[in-house]
Image (cartoon, rainbow, N blue to C red; front, side, top):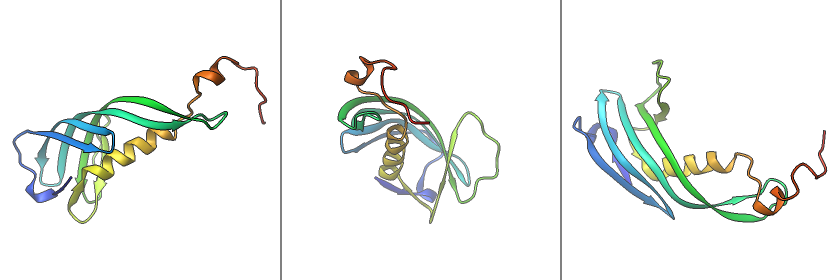
Amino acid sequence: MKIEFRKVPQTTKELVVQYNSVKIEGTFCRISSSLVKVDAVLKGKTDIDCCRCGITEVMEVNEELNLLLSDGIYSGNEEEYLVIEIEKGLIDFDDIIESELNSIKSDYHICDECQKYGDNFEKEF
């Protein structure tokens, strides 16, 4: 789902966007002329690779998202929210979901089979 930044209302609106098997559910609203606040939960299932053996497993995703979407370069100091700078005045929630999923997939994940071996595997130093 795409929405123009200037068309985001100042009143809180419901947000439900599905991308593949994952969706964002929550609210969003404009809090200034250049900022949109998104409070939502990322839910669903995604494939994730084991960092030891490389097999793919299905992982349940349930992540809280507190985002500030900035129309252009953000110069504030907000620690509670993750800031995403939007280009060309167009918010693409599918891209945001994909970016969050890639962030989750980039973490180290060890499958159930590899966890049985504990630290009993070859380490490279």
